[in-house]
Every structure is written in structure tokens, then in C-alpha cells.
Image (cartoon, rainbow, N blue to C red; front, side, top):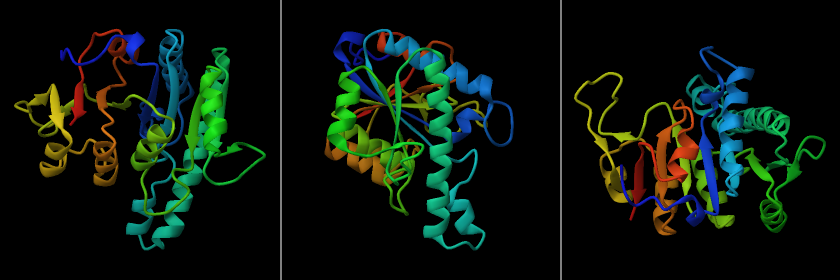
Length: 243
């Protein structure tokens, strides 16, 4: 384990980025309510430590813009459909968090006032100061940008101290550890190395934005019970992407 993770008291505000696929459980599509509830409990355990939490959730469990584009759909239209999928996931997470008595706001980059607040930076910051979890939905509001980039953008705007990227493996590897027994895990890796070796942490735009603002990315396994809280407590296995 790296010694570079500060204790929980040193991280007062973080961004949790998870994929839409993380909400599927063992299903091949859609939302698996017990899995959503389990992730909400993980978030609650960190919220109970006094850490302010933002979230961005992808939409790949419902619709992925790039796949739609690859099948002949206009890219911008496909991306807007993907953004709407992220709103559905955000609403599901809001319901699960509020079932845990965590006050939560879904904040959408595309206006849909009946189901979510519009994105206003100062209002979102105020929600965090009041210990509400902010789930940012609809990406950046623009096509051609991924939810990884949206998470990095919002993390910078909210003055988060790190992005926690929840995945199915316990860090960054030089190749897929599920396919290659000799895959090497990194404890620490630089932004430039991630880009040069195409390590697949986040897309290039997100990595460059994090690098330019010196925002560390912590890659960990969301499937490890207590993993999110454990890392904030100085334990667990993860990879730190930094300058």
C-alpha cells in the first residue's frame, strides 16, 4: 500500500466516479437495486466520516453514446441519449442514498427541472457545505465528452481534493489482470505514464485535465466491501495517479 494517501481528516471533499455498469450487478443490462443499495451504503460509510462527497455515474448500463455512434447513429444524438441514461442512474442512486438518510441532490447539466436541479456551481458548493451528497448527471451537457471528463471537470469546480475511480479491479495494471496472470499492478503512476502507456484509467481528456490541475486519481475496487472507506482511513489496495 502506498503511504501517499492522507488520513480521512486530510480529505475533506472527494469525487467518486463509477461506471454505469457498476450498477448492473450480475445482470447484463440496466439497474440491479441491491447493487445500487450496496454502493449507497459504501458512500454512507464515508459520509459518516465527515467527508463531503460528489458523484458522477456513467450511463453504459443503459446506453453508451460511442456504441450508438458505431452502429450508424449520429454521434451527437447518441451522446445526448447517453447523458439521459446518466440521469436515470443518478436518480436511482439518490433514492438509495436517501433510503440511508443521506440528503442528496441530483444536479443535471441539461435542464430538466421536474427531476433534477440545474447545474449552478455556487449552489452545488453550498449543498456540499451542508453535507449533502451531490450527484452530477448528464455529463458536461455537451456531446463528445465522456463522464470521466465530466467527473474531472466537476471535481475541479467543486475544489475536490481527489477523484476516487471505482472499478472492478484493485488498481491500475499494465494489462487486464483477469486475462493475464502476469499483469503488473502499479502503486503509483504518473499522469504522463498513463497517457503514454494507454493504461485506460480514464480517457485522455480527463487525465490531461487532472494533470493540469494537479488533481490525484485514486483507482480502487468498488467490489471490495468497505474499500472506499478503507482507503480514506489509510488502508486497502489502490493505485494513485499523480504528478
